[in-house]
Length: 222
Image (cartoon, rainbow, N blue to C red; front, side, top):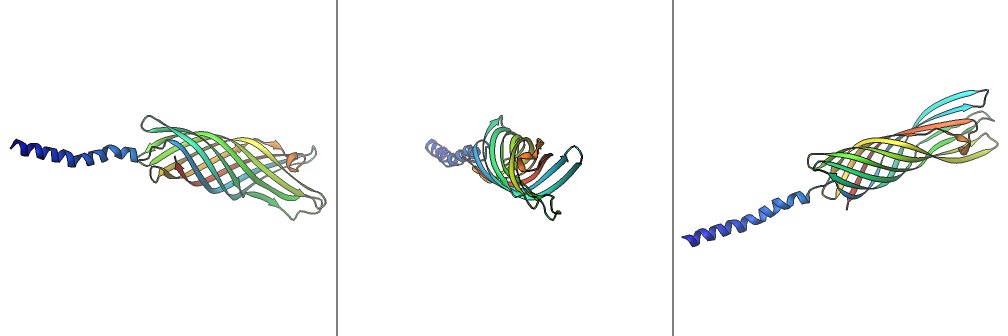
């Protein structure tokens, strides 16, 4: 009788061990939202510009907004803080199709385009896990953006570009497809310092620009 009981107990332990091992290993198979990551992103880019012309006699201020598309790549690293929170650092490079063009002006007046150029970003984020697969986060970053200009008055043609520093604030949600792959949705607002526009061919003019972006992305954690 004792032999039968010991054999039954051994059988229960043997058959239950795999299930117990799976239960123990399950958390390790889920997303951690930590470690190095790489992603591609893209979306809607709205660039707003304010140009102020002042030659000492005439003063004109013009504001405009133009829509375009942006796309880029990002590298980052995230670290867990306790069981629920994550902090991380990242850097990205992006380009944009947004531009503001004006043609058809009378002879002697300027025709041309202001175009958004490349953009370099470096910043940090703080996130909180929502359930098992989602991370909601806020971000802040330094941004170096480029504005390119090409203009002509019918006789002379000038072109140039200006690189300017700015700051960015944003928020988003990241969803883990599995332990290594994820997708995201994000909104960003960026503000750049105003500058004298001689570098891009506009004398007696100051330019300030900002950006509103709605992005989607997909990435891999290593």
